[in-house]
Image (cartoon, rainbow, N blue to C red; front, side, top):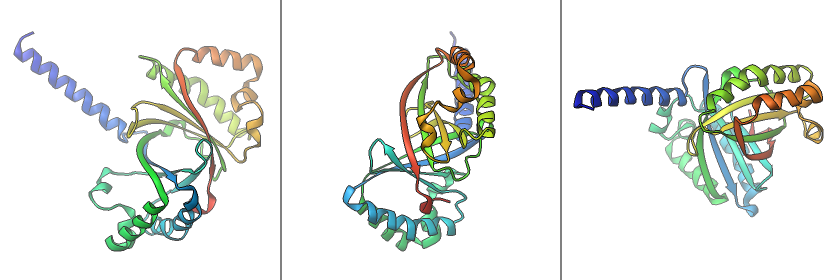
Length: 250
C-alpha cells in the first residue's frame, strides 16, 4: 500500500473514530449521565447522608442541576451509594462544577473535605441513556439493574432487539402497572466501554418476588419466543438491587 493510500485510510479511520466518540459522548438521541459511586465508611453513613441532605442537595438545586438522584445499594455493598445526574457538557470540568457555582470555591472545598472524611472510595463514570427506550419511572423507589456485555459483533443486533422486541413489551408492562419504568444505558468513560445496562424501576420491592414484567405481559409461550429471539446476543455481567433515597433526590 503506497503512502497516499495509507494517508487516505488513516484519515478515514480518524473520521470514523471521531464520529463514534461524538455519538458516545451525548449525540442525538442520547442523554449523557454522570454516575458517582461512593463507598461510605460504615461509621460515617449518618454523617454523609446529613451532608448530602443539608448541603449538597441545596447546592445542586441552586446551581441549576435539573436532576439529582441518590440510590442506596441493598444487594451488594450495603454502604455503597450511587448518585446519578445529567452531564450536559464536559465544559463543567473546566471549573469546579455545581458545588463551586453555588457555594464559591472556599465553601465548596470545605464541603468536599467533609465529604471525603466520610468516604472510603469514589468512582466516577459516564453512561449514555438511549432516549428512544426511556419509560419515565417517576419517583420509583426500587431499581433492578442488569448489566450486559454484547457478544462480539452483536451490539447493534442487541440494540435492534431491544427496539423491536423488548421496548414494546416493556411499554405495555408499564401501562399494565407491572413495573414503573425503564432506562437503557451504554458505558462510555470510566469503565469498560460499551457495557449495556437495563435499569428496571418499580414503585416498591414486592414485584421482585414474582415473574419479571416481560413474563407477566407475554405469558409462558410468548416469553419463550422472546428469549429465543434474543439468544446469543449478550452475556450477563451483574445484577444489583438499589433503593432510592427520597430526601436526597429530585
